[in-house]
Image 1: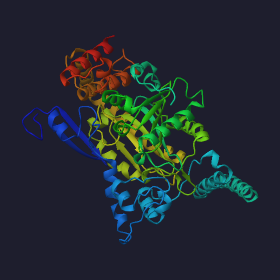
Image 2: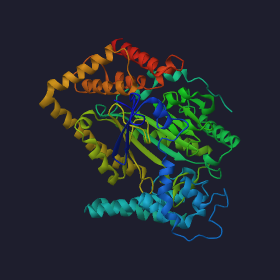
Image 3: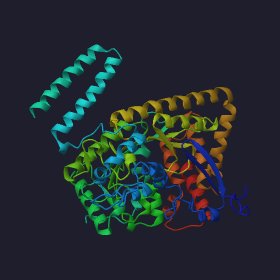
Image 4: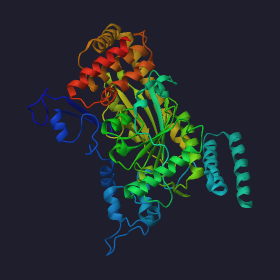
Amino acid sequence: MMCDECKKRPATVHITKIINGEKTLLHLCEQCAREKSIFDVSFNLEGEPFSMQKFLAGFFEPFMREFPEKSQPLSCDRCGLTFPRFSQIGRFGCSHCYEAFKGQLDPMLRRLHGKTYHVGKVPKRRGGKIRIKSEIERLKRELQEAVNAEEYERAAVLRDKIRELEQKLGRG
Amino acid sequence: MGVRDVSIEELLDTTKIEWINSTGPESDVVITSRVRLARNLKDVPFPHLLSRTQAEEVIDSVYRAFLTNPVLSKDARLYLMKDLSDTEKNLLVEMHFISPDLAKDDRGAVIISGDRRISIMINEEDHLRIQCIFSGLDPQGAYELASRVDDVLEEQLDFAFDERLGYLTACPTNVGTGIRVSVMMHLPVLTMLKQVDRMFSTMAQLGLVVRGLYGEGTESWGNLYQVSNQITLGKSEEDIIQNLLSVAGQIISSERQARRNLKGEDRLRLEDRISRSYGILTNSKLLSTQEAMGYISDVRLGVDMGIIKNLKPEEINNLFITAGPSYIQEVFKKTMTPLERDLNRANLLRQKLLR
């Protein structure tokens, strides 16, 4: 088999890319593969065969249009990252960016995750209240599931647990 | 800075790698389960904005924090990317200790535990990526360990956490739990029957994604596929793991069913293919990684279906690593031409199979 690119040398590098379930095949000689910087025999350390950031940047682009150009682009006062820059690189500059770009965040998160709030592990150090709150949230969802499944005994147990935690929260 | 380890020599000893030498649940189809948790330090810019000095401070504080737990950090090693050669970094990628992204930036580092089950990538996209790798289908086991490591580190480090959004990450695709659960599956027969593509396209609808052998954007060699979750926000770690488990369960049963059918309908041809692949692996003079992976996959199938009886699945896991592009160069401690690599690879695989 000859190289897809130069059509001169034999193809020794065979690339199967699967992106979102779509498969593309590429047959290249080592030289062309290197030039195309797709595959440097093993891993390509310098080039970017497929950059998730670039891919994401395209994804974030639409959120840019949701607010009109201002004289000063929206930026994070901690790290200085501007929102247009974020849209280009697909990464925030610091954890404070989440606060700085709050207004832009929810539609983006909804598109990425379908949700806009965290459910799950909470750092132990954050201690009591958040932990209890998120436990209540979790139990409430479980309660809803139990009700939907018509498992009323389980639902009753869950309801009592939620009450207990809510009281605890009120006291704390 | 604490003890830093420049040589990765000892990592070549695959007998020390837990996931290679044990067989976990459903190991006829699932090779490994991996969990990684993304965490960031509060009030420190994300890694791509860090200066060299700041990056070193992050490495130092994470390493110190990990060392506070003598059990988990027993015989742990710290490797700084800037101390490693390209081949060494590639080998760490091939052995799944680090991601290709970490290898690209010399401000990063990785801590690898003595049993090689824990690796903590420092200054990848996030300050910390705690990763645990277990043999077979055991994402819960991997999560429990990763979460323990997280607890240990969290006692010493102040992580960026928001009450509403959870763990804050450099990329909003990881925010919330910061969890990625991946299951590495060996699907030779579904691949043979060209059913994988169709199956994978439905996975996106389930919030799952399929990746190649070495992660994002890499291809699938040796019929190995990584299935992982994409959504990290609004679902608990347990739910994310359960969702992945149920999909993995379906894939496992389809692959098994396909294997049984194939054995029933075309046993002779299947045995012939597997025996030929074994023959090629034990007689070749030259083998490229990709070609070798294909034969190793056949041999693994032969072992799992009881057609090849003198080999154990663990030995095949070892072969998958041996066949990687960088392993050969590290074993012989030199950079080689593609031809030399293919020659040495063929020799080493033959030796390991005929030992």
